[in-house]
Image (tube, rainbow, N blue to C red; front, side, top):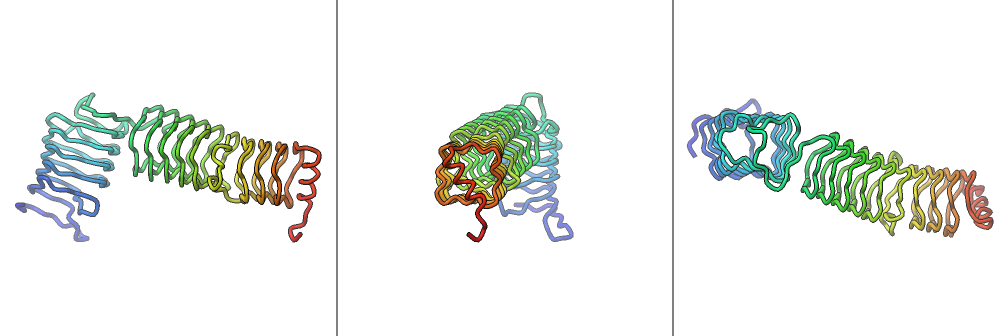
Length: 339
């Protein structure tokens, strides 16, 4: 490799590289990444899981170059020679590829925003590409390890997507379809999933703390060790299918107003101080559950299994239950904490 010009910045990092051949170079995670590439030959080079912020490619040869699982933010390509430039499972935002000369820009399972400029109106996409924004189609995409937090995707189609370890925190996902999507360990903190279709989705170990799930369809969801907290809004949700033993991790004070919890397994769950107003708990298994201080106003408790249930200080105004069950829960609610 012939070294013509190598500029070192104040911190001793290589920030600018000029007239150097990187043919078939592998820039995997952990390798140094330059801020500017000038007149560099990157033919056959492979960039894997790299984050590009404000990087400039000027006069660069990009023949059979691969960007795999990379995030390209505000990247500019100027006077670059291109053939078979391949973006594989990348996120491209606010970037400018107008300066690419040649043919064969390919993309598979790649996302781009509306501000990104391409050399032509219809680049040669392979296997699918989607523009970031509302009402998009992501069906079958592999979006694993992507940082998609805070963006607006409402009314989009995420059926069969893979979003393992993906950050969708604070994203607007209202009325989206996530049917049979793999959301294992997905970060959905404070995301809006109101009205979303999550039937058959895998939410195992996903973080839904603070998320809005009003009216979401969770039938058939896999939710092993899924995390909620007191800020999670789960009103008008059918949670019965995701409450198998060990599946529903809830903390004290969770909001379950109007939730459909018929025949739900809530054995030994800590639901103290929770909002269960108007919840449908018919036939629910509440053995050993702690509902101390919970608000059960208007809840339907017919056919529950209350052995060992704790209801100290709970509000039970307007509760629907058999006469025998009602007398039993009234005694529990009036029980002093030390008894």
